Image (cartoon, rainbow, N blue to C red; front, side, top):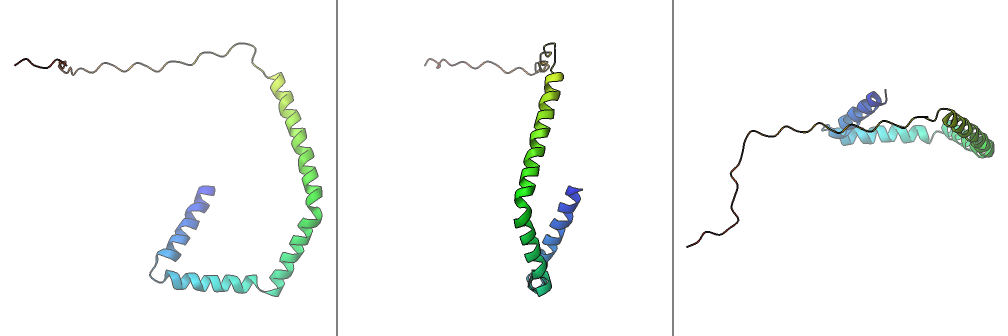
Length: 114
């Protein structure tokens, strides 16, 4: 699902920036987005959300911290119960490559006598 969203987003960005009228369309979309963002009703909701987060952030942080500790304890308990009793089997070595049939003549490193 994430890949599909990224694909659609990439296609949209490519369309906007890649078309001949891309810059004009981008400016048109930017103007519309700024008009919505600067609307007083939207700004009221933004301020309300900001205040809500400021008021409830400590409670949320402590709840998250407590739950993370509980989960860590459970994971540790499961690990201690499910530890393997026999040693792990050694990893297999990769199969050897067959020798090539072509042979090249050995080169001599000695210099020829004149």
